[in-house]
Image (cartoon, rainbow, N blue to C red; front, side):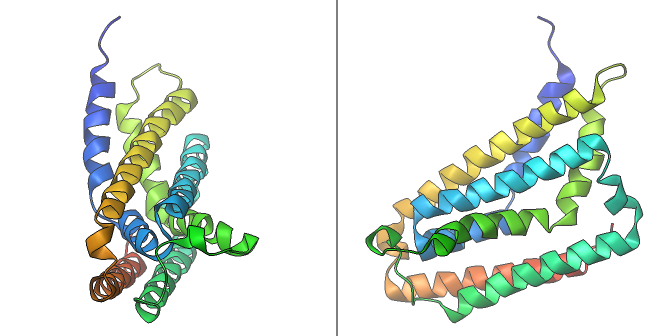
Length: 209
């Protein structure tokens, strides 16, 4: 089988972009501290689900609307920025006040779904993700290749890398639990991640296409 230099290049670049800190890692850090690693897997699932929708829309060309319509882009980014800021404020307000072991506490169905919803909304309301797929993937699609199938394949690789990376990162944060869940340290970290989420929300609010 012939080597595919475009695929190798994509995997290398996508891997670097995947591990760069951003809203996803900040949210995962927050939720590992707030609700535990097991429920944070729902957050990671929500992030991945948002990526699937963005990737599919990109492959179909729907994301071009965000790339060409200033109004649509502004509307989506404003909602996404407001949601990140809200999560950050909630993290700061509740710093040190939640148990990191939710398994010991019964939760309602709505609260059980909340980590997934947080991950999903954080991702789906970020128009930069849609534009990333729309502008990044075509660079690794050769002439004559089936665009839709190739786009979904590349996006699937990126989503899989993101899922594995965030799962490993959540495990790492959880392994530091004996230190990170000390009341003073946990409260400080929740405030720090809350501040980071607010900063990321502000950056998204000022983002340009």
